[in-house]
Image (tube, rainbow, N blue to C red; front, side):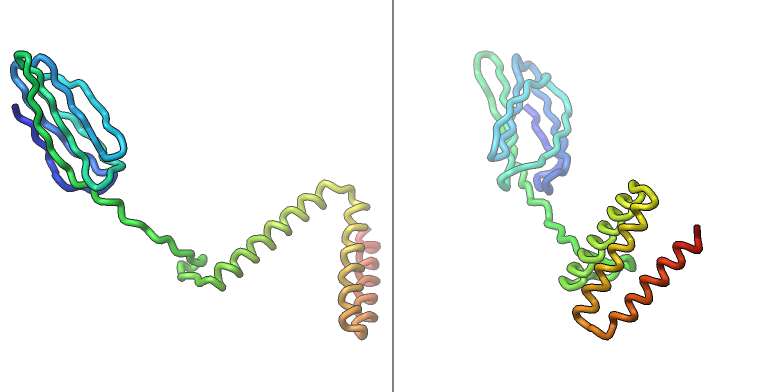
Length: 173
C-alpha cells in the first residue's frame, strides 16, 4: 500500500495533495480527523486528491483503510497545521499615515458631521421652497440666540446678519 502526502507541515488554509495506490483493494476509505470533526471519504483503489486544511487543533490525522481478503490494513499520516498569523489592522488617514486614538476619534467626529450634513441637505430638498427659507431662518435665529446668551455684545451683529440674509433673499426673487 502506498500512501503519501506532499507536505507534513502547513498553515491553516493551505492545500495538501494525497497520493495512494492500493492494488487488490476491495474497499478503500480515507478518514480525516482535525481534532474537531472526523470525516470518512470512500476512495478508488488508487489516485490523487487535494484537500484544504482549514481548521485544526494543531495536527490533522489522515488515515487510509484498505479492506483486502477479509482483513483491514491502515496507514496513518499526521500533518502539523499551524495557526494562520493574526493580522493587526491600523487606521490610516487619506495620505496613508498611521492614525492614533485621538486621530481615530476626530475622524469619527468628522464622519458623523458629514453624515448629518448630508441628511439635512436631503431633508431640505424634500421641503417646499418657502419652508426651506423658514427652516434656514429658524436655524439662524436659534444660533443667534445661543451666541447672544454666551456673549451679549454679539446681539447687534447677529441681528444685522439676519437682516442681510433676508434682504439677499428678497433681492434674488
